[in-house]
Image (cartoon, rainbow, N blue to C red; front, side, top):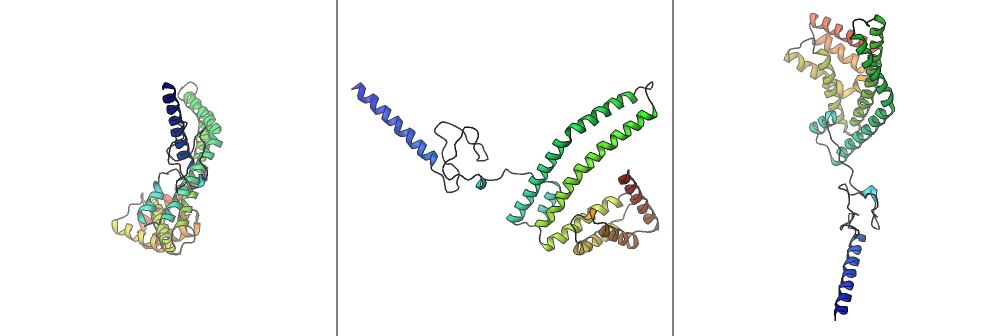
Length: 261
């Protein structure tokens, strides 16, 4: 009698295990597993399989949901300004992923060099903090180190800038023109901040930028010298007074000198 009960328990256990295995092997319509693997393995939150986990028949990694990205900065502004379609939003997210990969590669390639520059800069700062060890040569060496660090930062910023310019490619023609006008206004507002504009002048600058955005050929507005020269000339000639015009010219010369060094 005891033997019969033992056999029944074993058969029942095998049946349950077989049913669990069948449930794990059966893919859902979405291609993702609907039950945990019989060996008790866990599936990561994003639906992909970790080490030692066997995908079920028909599993297609490319059909799995992409890892979410954080939409911020200019990308967030685009999403806020325009009613993007699902395809446009996906395009923005793909650009963000590409930018993150490019920046990660840049950081990896330049880590050793940047660490060395920072190490040398710390040593030079320590030396210059000692009045007995101060020298013009050491001060010039420190300036050179700072400049090289700034160049690396500028190169990294340029990579990010190029990807952000690509975001205009997912917009419609009308949206693109509006966005270029917005970017132009950002650049001009920053340049004109030391000049001091009235609210009426700010509105005039914005109108010039919006109109220029409709005829611009490049979304990378700061790299389009002809576009920037045209907008600056319009603002200087029709918006600024004589004193502001002089100050604006000084601001532009100062900025150009910093870029040249």
